[in-house]
Structures are given as C-alpha cells and as structure tokens.
Length: 335
Length: 289
Figure (cartoon, rainbow over the protein chains, first blue to last red):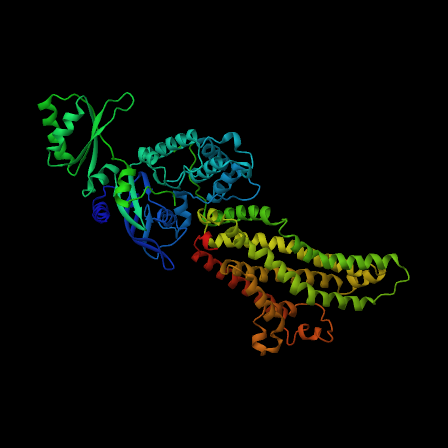
C-alpha cells in the first residue's frame, strides 16, 4: 500500500505534464450506499496509454465512469484536461468512452450508430459522413457498416462501439475492456490502433484483464485492489518499488549448475533454481533476489571468474501480471 | 488523428442546441412513434373514435333510426370527452408515452450514449419531450377530431352545416383539439418527470389520477392544484352528469380561459425544469435499475 501513496504523491508533485493536459483525480472516493467503489484516489494521468489493472470489483469501471461523468464522486474532484463533465459541450468533444454496455438502439446499422453520435456533436451532414467513414475504417468494419447491429457478432459490436467513441477525434479515450470478444487478428489490429492513438498524443485509458497484451502497449499502469490504487507508474518502476518481494531473473548459460552454486554465495540471492532447456534455448538458472542491482554486480564477477558463457539475462517477472500477483495476490480478471 | 481536415463544430450556442434537439427529436420519433409496445396506447386513443364512427355508420344504414337530437349528441360528446377522453385515455396514454422516454433507455441500457455526448441535459429533456408531445398529440388530437366528425356524421347535412358554419361547431372542434393538445403538453411534462424521478412511475401515476379525479371534496384552493381542473375549465360544453358520474364530472368555480391556459403552460414549464434538474443529478447505474 505504501507503494501507491508514495508514488501518487510523487506523481502529483513532480508530473512534468501541465495539469491542464492530464486526467486528474484529487482525493476521489465513490461509495454506492455502504459499498465502496474507490477510496481516496489521487492520480495524475499524462498522455499516452495507461492501463487499469485489477480483479473483479477492484474499481476499474468505477474509475472510468468517474472520469467520464457517468457517476459522480462521493467526495473529491475529477478533471479531464482541466474540464469537468458539468460542462458537457466542451467536455465530451474531448472525451470518448467505449463502455462495456453491449446495447444499441433497435434496427440501427453500424454506420447510423456512429453517425448519430456525430450529429449530437454538432457536425454538419457531410462532416458526419466523412468522420463516421473514417472511424469505421479505422476499426476495419467498413464491409459490415450498413448492416444492422442486431446481426453483428460480439467482436463486431465491440468494434462499432470503439468506432463511435473515436469518431469525433477525442483527446482522451477511455476504453472499458476493449479487447473483449475480439478474435486474435482483430485484437492485434486494435492494439495497433491504440498504440497509434497513444503515439498521436492522446490519453488512452484502458482496462483489461488480458494483461500480457496490455502490458506490451502500456506507457503506464494503475493497479487497483478493493477500491484502492495499490501502485501506479511505469511497469518497470512499479516493479522496482516492490522491494519486499524478491525479483526473479532468468539466466541462460553454458554452466547453469556452476552459476547456481556461485549465486548461492551472494548475499542478495534468496533462491537459485535450475531451469530445463526450452526449445532452442539452453538450460538456465532462475534467481530470486531482493537486490537486483547488487546481484548484477556479483554476476559480473562470477561470469568473469568462472568463464561462464551467457546466452541471455532477463527479468522473469517484470510484467504487469507478476507485479499484480505480488501486490494483489490474484490473477484478476475483468470487472 | 486523421488526414481529413475537419474542424470542430463552431456553431453558436442556440444553433448547437437546435441541431442537437433536432437530432434527438428525429431519432426519438423513429424509436417511439409507432411501436409494438405502444399498441395499447393507439387502442386507447382510437377506440372511442372507432365506436362513435361505428354508431354513425349503423345510424346511416337504418333510415328508421331515431337517435338523440343534435343538441343531445353535443352534450354526449362533451361527456365522453370529460369522463373518458381526458382522464383514462389521454392520462394513461401520456403515462405510456412519456414515462418510457427515459425509463425505456434505462431498461434497454442505452441512456449512457446520451450522457456521453456533448448535450446539455436540458436539451435532452427538450428533444425527448417534443418527440413525446408530437406522438401523443398526433394520436389523441387526431382521435378527438375523428370523434367529433363521427359524432355528427349521421345527421342530415343541413343540421351539420348549421352547427358548423352558423353555430359554434368549428369553435367546439378547435376547443376539443386544443384542450387535448394542452392535456398532452401538461400530462406529458408530468410523466416525463415521473419517469426520470421514479423507477416505477406507474404507482405515482395512479395516485395522481386519484387526486385528479376526487379532489372535488377538497377546499377550493386545493382543487386548483390539478391539471384536470384547468383543462375542464376550458371545455366548450358543460355536460349534465347524473348519479355517480356527478361525483367526477363537472367543475365548480372554473378558471377563466386565459388563466387556465397560462396555468397549464406554467405547470408544464415547472415540470420540465424539475425533469431537467432531476436528469442533471442522474447517474448511470443500470444494475440497480
């Protein structure tokens, strides 16, 4: 828990991005009657791709609904690029939200659905057509655009909702489980689209339980548990802050037994375990250490002293899933 | 984000509100004007017209038929209008049309699309209310016009002409259609608000019907806290009620036409403001609905 508090304070104080260009939570709590949604959340989310990670009921959707004004905080303040949902005409020109609600108007086609959102934005008819076409093309759904949504597959419905949320070219895009229902091909295309949007300077806030995919594209992560932010920042940085949990390093080399024996002599090493060869990769040693920097210094000496040929040295748990398991003790899932 | 150079809309506030209300109106009319769900409303609106026209057609086919005199049918239509048309028909028709405008969005889990668009909640209320009003007015104003024409269709032409052209007939027709429109306007605003305020608006609707029907036993100033009081103050013909009908028919100390119309507009405005205010406080929580 200390990870979050210190990190949040650092982020709030030291964020290099002006607050007018961030999504900001100031001491935000949300209770549904007696039930806690989120509690005392302080966050400053800069542009780029930010992932919300946490198990069911951890508060991911609550945070997203707070950002977009679908619910109001019980206390505290949420600002998006300096605006609040109380001024919808400015706010929702800058914000797009692809929710999890899989519902649409009756007898509406995909194109009509996207166009209707744009009409409410106040665009003229030709611009509505052009923007809708552009958004539908970006989610690769042009062929089905003039069919009724009622006949769409789950993945197509997911993509048409995504198209509607990006059609007006928002600066902040909030996506609740956007990869749900997508086949591997569509998932890869969608992740590419998110990366493209993130590189264009948008805030892309994603919740997902497909951790390894989100991990690949995220600039920063926010880990949630039981309504609290337990850690946030760049995944490497968050991992480094989890001092109380040993870090795992997988070293593949030509003399794994010797390396394991030598590694036991290092003060920083908690455990050394031999690893079988894996496909083209040779055997190795899985090291668990509380002081990665200290171990790497010792490793240099061992390698030079015993003439060990290294094949690879890589963190074995420097991803969202591992940090998540350390902090939350769960593999989590969608909210 | 794109190669297309499309500027953000930069219309004036009023132009934006008008275009947004227009977009909402067109979609809501498409969604709600004719639906399977609304079958009972159309039946409620058109049943009296169908019965009256059936009566006229039967009368026309039987030359020996000696029905009521013209003046009696004028009074019968006034009775039907007050006892059946204003209360159960327009009242429950408006319950069905207007409460569903927002409650239906919650049931179908589509309200968030509006809440996530750059539309002020007041504009959303206005757009949806107009769609409901057009629907209700089309069916109920159309129905009372059909009732009016059907009521006198079996009379000889010279009697009809005398009533319409030399008598108060045209005035009566406009009055009935106008009162029906005002009823849709005021009850529509009431049930739009109740549809936002309550998860089950039927219960308050029934309580209010009871109030509207039986507040004659209350002091004079409380009688005026009723939409029906002002609507009935405008009726062009005051029918004579007998027996139990006298309890719910007739209006003592009616308001003047101008006071009644202004009051109905004022009530509608207050109710729409309440609806907007309620909607502004609303959050999306489909699971609890």
